[in-house]
Image (cartoon, rainbow, N blue to C red; front, side):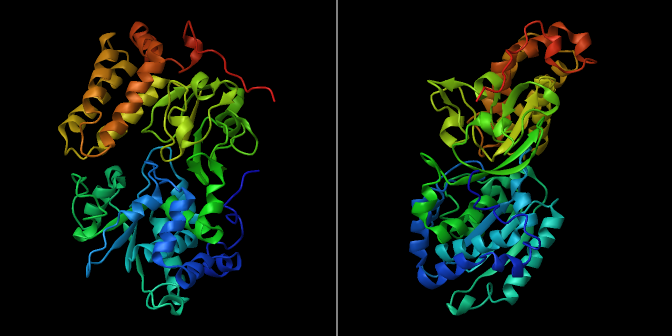
Length: 454
């Protein structure tokens, strides 16, 4: 059994209340940080922990904090990015729903470390139940003297607010989030300047994901060095994974980074294997914006070393081709799933969610959706695959924010690994519109990949 740092008490009745949360050691990190550590010492503990951003980018959190400008007489802000919009990702919503005080405790400690006296939790607009839960938890914390003026008699003041978002995927990008928080249209900003220099209201700002901020609590409680002992290499600590798709046990799992991918998919501790006794066909390892990998590559071994659930191993790790840890949205496809249909579905989402500010993204996502639509519905041409790859190359790296890359990578990787399936949609156009989507319809299906014997 791997260690649980965030979800250890998730099933304790009443853990969403302040009383029960404190009975289980809650707010000990606030007491320790505010009473025994300086803000710089808190930042140093987070640096030593090796914590990397859990929202998708994987940038070292302590380093990001250290970049924050500290001009005299200018306020600083901490903003929690709870605009969880990535298809396949739902672990932040899970945390906010069942253990909201963990996030609030992390916000207090992180705000103290950054010298912020006003902080915000920006929550996706559709998550109204979670917004109400957080507001209730904030009121409990404030009544207990854990928020507001002179927290725990330490002289530190902090006001914490929950801000509903507008329901736009683009507002998960930190600068678009800041624009939205200021009451403007959520369009990404050109960088530099970065938020650490000129963020919310033009002031120094740090934007961190829900899970990143929650992880600060065990880091302070146990110490950065102890936290860094968990995991593997530069992938330290634990990570929440949103597991969905054709799995026996979909859900949110907390893993120690470094667990083999095969173990995560097939062990009873985690996903329990592929549903209905089917074979695994492909995996999207980090949410819809990361490259898809076929089963034989996601479960590949090199010199008897398996691909691991870590930032380095999933991105490549010497396996010649890779994906990304991303936001931890782990989607498994069984042998009956149509890659063309799923790729079109992803492209439809990115076209709809593009803010339209950059022409490569605005026009390119539309082109990809249209071409994939005609392939899926039996009107495609053999040249369409090369057209899609060409369009994806023209989008990638040519936009203000990463949404363009997020739209391009799934399409390019799907064609790279499953080109025969795309071609089948052209050569079997009539059947493509009516068939049961599965490997059985291909003359040369993917090689069978079984669970390795223990």
